[in-house]
Image (cartoon, rainbow, N blue to C red; front, side):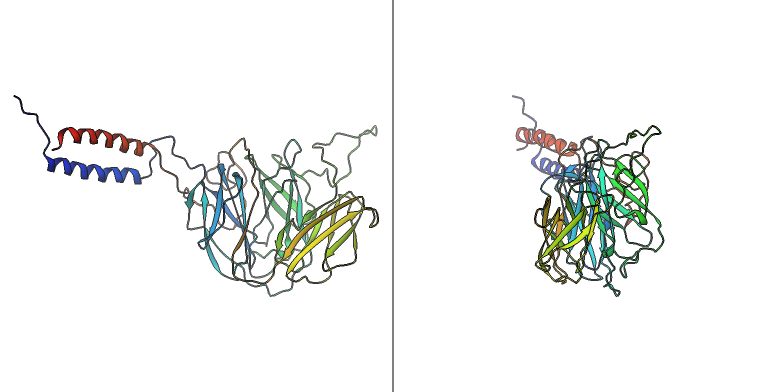
Length: 420
C-alpha cells in the first residue's frame, strides 16, 4: 500500500511561525490597496482662535459626518451629541501663559500632530477696553439661516478670531475681550477704519470670503453663502426706480424681531463687563433688566438696522444672572425675551469645555480654507497655526485583514491534513 506523504512536524511549525509574522506585519501597515481605505473623519485644518489668558477656541471640519471630541492635556471632552461636518470647541478656565497640547478624537480615532498645540496669552496689563463688537448674520443662497457655519475674522493687529453660527444664523465676536497678535495685552482696534477679512465655512461645503472694514462691524452686513460681496440690504435703504417703484432686492431678509444675541442662553462669560446686544425692530426703545444686579430698568434704542446694544455701568462679579429685554412699555410690553448666563472670572486652573451644536444633513464635503488639499481655489485665511503639510493619520484598508483570514483558514485545513 502506498504510504501517504506528510510534511514533517518541525517544518510545519516553522512555516506557521513565519506565516504569523507576516500576518502581524500586514495588519499593522497602512495600505492603499483597497479603495475602502478611509480618512473621512480626519480633522481638516484645525484652527486655534480667540486666544485669551484663560480660554481658547478650536475648530475644524471633516469631509464626512462624524462625532468628535477634544482632548486637551489628556483631559477628555464627551462627544458631540449630533454628528456633523463642522466642529467647534471652547476650552475655558485655562492657566495664564501656559502651553497646552490637544488631540482630536474623530470617528472613533485619535488624531495628533506636532502643530496640535497652543499657548495662552499673558495676563493683560491694561484695563478692559470698552464694549466693541463684530457681529452679524449668515444666510444660505435661499435666504435660510446658515446655521452650523464657522466664521473666521482676521483684523490686522489682532489674534485670529472666530465664531460659530447659531440656529438663527447669528454670529458674534467681542473685540473688547480679544487679544493683540502677540498675545501680550488686549487688542485695541485702530482709530481709523481698516480692511478685515471674513471667511465663512458653511456646513454644506462652501467657503466664502468677503472683505469688510472695522467701521462696519456693528453689525457686519449680512453674508450670503457663495457670494463674495456683503449684502447691504440690512443697512441701506431699499433702492427705488426712476418711476418711484421699489426695485427688487435679493435676497429678501426676514423682518427683525426682538432677540438677545449675546450672551447666549446658559453661557459662562469670563469678563466682568460682558457685552449685551441683539436685534429688534428698527428705531425702537428697548427696556433692559439685569438681575440680580439691576433692580431698575435701563433703556436703550435700536438703530436703523435693528441692532441694539447695552452695557452695565459697573463690574459684575462671579455668579448667575438673568437679562430681560422688552419692547413697547414696561406696563404693556409687546415682546419680552429673557436669557440666563453666568460670570466666572476667577482662574481655578480646571479645564472646562463647550462644544458646538451639530447639524444632521450635508450634501457635499467641506474643503479646507488653506492652500493644501483643496479641490478648488479658495482664498487663504490667516490662522493661528499654519495648515499641516502632511496628511492626518488615515485608517487602514480591509484587504490585509481579508488576506490574513483567508490564508489562515487555508493553512488550518492544510495543517490538519498533513502535519502529524
